[in-house]
Image (cartoon, rainbow, N blue to C red; front, side, top):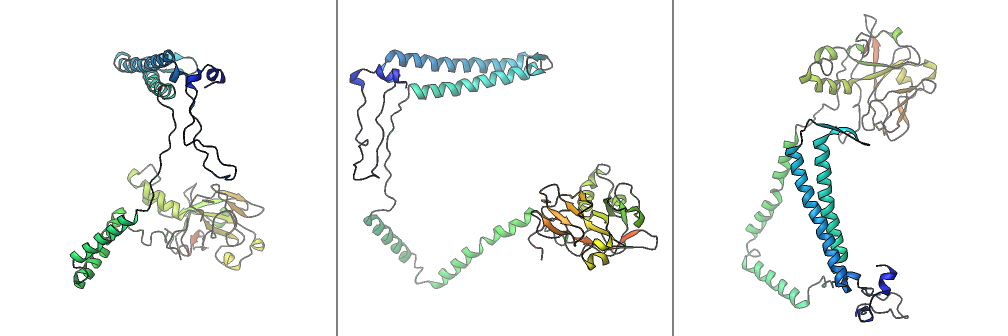
Length: 361
Ligand code: FES
């Protein structure tokens, strides 16, 4: 209510101070200030203003009704293939535009009417609702204890220990049926998370060319992605054999490795050199944070960067984490050169690849 409105309020309508709105005593700075005095609105004291507000609310509701009728008509009366050009929106379906517009108006007018009604005509006097005490009175508590004791005595549970113990056993076991139902959530992963498609002697296949990789193919500064031989032939690239594409993706994701060539003098770890071939090392492509594929290599620092949350791994130091949220090093794949002169795995990864999980030792 504006100050001008207040000045027009006749004397007899000046607000009464409710009993709860008492002035706090100066001696008690934390006294409950109570509710502020109620100030009547123009519609509380002027019947004409109240009637006007009523008509405005009714007008909004009528507009809403007309818009709903327009909505129904748009559905049945407008050709759904008709296109119109509306300024700002461009070319859109006439029926969609009409349906959206009329429904929007119908809902808006109901909301606006309700708000206007509440603000002008519904009572706006604030009231205090006293809460009852949380604790029961002493008689009620005594009564409850007496009833409980009587019930326990009537059930003879105190004198029948056999019933008491078997009942406790039954109640303790029954929740186990819920645990059994958890098996419906799907098969347990078993050792699936611990093993990939790499086996001793599996050749590394260049993911881009589909050919076995020779040591000379890996040049300094480049990053080569490789998959185990047989994976592509067995499962087919994603999209070609649709029913198998999910399995292919899962296995490819788990087994993908990155190959880089390092200067042996730059490598800090003897084990890392021993697991590589003349400075060529193979690391899992899957970030150990939450499993994003890693793809950014910084040649000068030998750092691999995960684009998801910026975990950074040092390839010259056993793939250790040098920055970011990942908690463990990138797993290294032990490789050698086979009789055909191609790079091949010496074994599976020695530890699970990808994001950590609860069973990981
Ligand atoms: S998934 Fe690589 S940093 Fe989060």
